[in-house]
Amino acid sequence: MEYTLVLVTKKEEKRHLYEHKEIFNELKSTLWKDFNINFENNIELYKNNESFIISKNEIKTSKEIGYEILNNKLHEWFGERLIDFYFNDSKHFNNDQRKLAVFDMDSCIIKNECIDEMAGIMGVSEKVSMITARAMAGELDFNQALVERLSLLRGMTTKQLEQVWEKIELNSGSFSLIQTLKSFGFKTALVSGGFSYFAFRVASRLGMDYAVSNQLEFQTTTDNADNGLSEETLTGRVIGDIINGEMKKKVTILLENLLALKQSQIISMGDGSNDKLMIQYSDMGIAFHGKPILRAATPFQINFAPLSAASFYLSNIYSTTPPPTEVESFCTNKNHIYNTSIHNLSENQALVTKYIDFNKINLNK
Image (cartoon, rainbow, N blue to C red; front, side):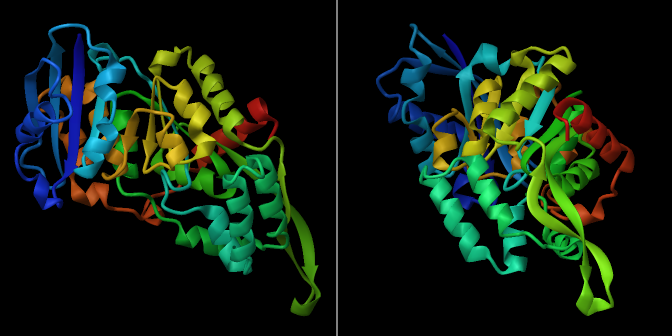
C-alpha cells in the first residue's frame, strides 16, 4: 500500500525548527512501531520561507495495512505536537483534477460570527448566546435557532449593519488560499449560513465565483423622533429557504452539476456542525479550526495553521518544483497570509450582480 503524509508547521513554533525527518522517525518508533513502514521521496518545500515548514512524504508498507489502522490516533499524536497534517492513500492525494472549492464564511473565511456581532450592537448578546447553546445541545435545529435569534434583531437599521461590516476581518490565509486556488484553475464558492448582506461583499472582494447566503428581509420604517425620516430596518426574517446544512450540500451538488464536474473534483472547508454534510460529500472536506462534531466527521483538518495551509494538501502545488513565484508568494508570504483586512480590497459589483442573479434563478432568493 502507498500513502502520502504531508506535514505543515508554523515557523514561529520554535520547537518545530528541527527537520521533519526527526518527526517521522519519532512517529515510526512510537505510534507506528508495530508496522513495517518506509518513508520515501521526502520533499521539503520552502525551507527558506518565513511562514511554514512543509514536507511531503511517500509511505510504503510491506503488506496491506488498512488506512483506518494507520490513521488511528494520528490526530491526537500530531495534535500534541501542534502539527497540521494530511494523510491518505496516494491515489487520493494525487487527484489533481479537483476544480471546485466551497467555503463556509463565518469563522472560516472571516474571523467573525456576524450574528454575534449584530447581537452585540443590538444589546441582545446574552439572549442570542442562550439560543446558540440550546442549538448546540440539540434542543433546537439550525433553522429554529436562526429564526429565534433573528427575531431578536428586528428593527436593526442598515446603519447598524454597516457597523457590523466595519468589524469584519478575514481569517489569516483566506486571501492567500483563494488566490492560490484560482491560479490552479479552481472555481470558488462561498456558501454561508450567515447573511448575503455581508457574504456577497466578502466573496466579491476575494474574487470568488459564486456566493450563496441567507437574504435578510427589510422593511421601511419612519423614525418620528428623527424628523420623520424613513430608513430600512430588519423584519427579523429571511427571504426564501434558510441555508442550513442540507442546503449547503444541495448547493454544492448544484454547482457540481452546473460546472459538469464529479464529486471527486470537489473540496470544501468549514468549521461547524452546519458544514458537516458539505464536508462529508466533498472528495476532500477540511475542518478549519473546527468544532468537535465536525472534526469527528473528517480526517482532513487544519487546527493550528492559517487557512492557506490547505494549499499544501493539494498535489497541484508539488507538480512544479519549485512552484511558480506567484503561488509561492501567496502560500508563504506573511504580508499575504496575515493581511486580514477585507476593507483594503476592492468590491466587484459585477460579481455581486452575478451572485444575486444566481440566487434568484437557482434558489428563489
